[in-house]
Image (tube, rainbow, N blue to C red; front, side):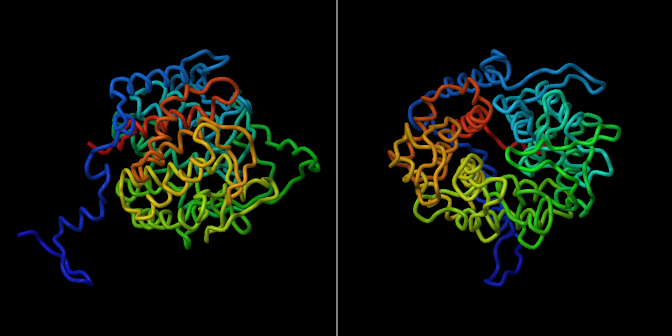
Length: 441
């Protein structure tokens, strides 16, 4: 007889309760849907296409295809960065995406080189900088700063890719002790002290102070007081857009990654596991609050209650824009791995219905939340995230159309190959069942 534990509604076998906690998705079943195979494309061809995409984006022509660039060596080994070609910088977003792609493709050399560059140039080590311990979100490709502050989406993907690397390849020493590195970042995300200081700040001791270039039409930069703290709001149990305080207490729906939070509630620092389990549940509810009830579109930034948030530096933030593309793939991957959000199918059906009506091969990449187009560009990265929404959507001609659109899309090249390419690569892996949870052995 199975042991039992008392609950308010009665008693449940312990094994049954554990199963409920683990959901009914791939974490429990170890089965990952291959949406391409469901539509008649062979597994062999999917794997060949994934490898070809990796080779193009990481080792293709440096002038028109690659986003990964080798950058010499230091005492920790080879260095490499992932760059936003159009903006001539390296971002924690792209660096962490590159690491995630590398661990999913079993490419340890590329993973280690990116992580080494991030630690060498992006990690804030000057104790006078209130962001100390975090990673500066944007750097010139020569390692000089374009920012002295972090963005939580990069830290989130750093953490998850490091845990996967630890579990898939084992831990090394120093910066390559991946579990220790993930634990450090994840702990800091919740427990970073609240520090207020007046800039300009350095990334590393001995660097020149970083003075931001003025925005077009803005007055010259002047010294200002900055407060930096945790990357989460403790009461709301929600990831922040930036780890500040006061007026910075709002979120970005595309930063919500409940599929990852569930794993952190099992593998992360013990004292924080309950928090991340609660954060996963909060994020699932937040997706419904932050998306339009008719179109399924989410804003780039939103208040904790889901209402759109606009900022002086980003007038588009209250609309569906570049960050927002990722939101549908986030709730859909969560549904695939855990199947704990009863609204995931509704949300995917809603956004796919809206975009399908615009034309699968021509929908715009920016909209008002009620569906008025704000651009004429049809972006491969958004095609990719919309295809991943089919993991949660009702099986229909509509959901199949998005999967087929991704299958027929070429690997991004040219000036826009960075963001489109990263999203293409990760979501191709999701749709083909090749993006997996790498758990402890």
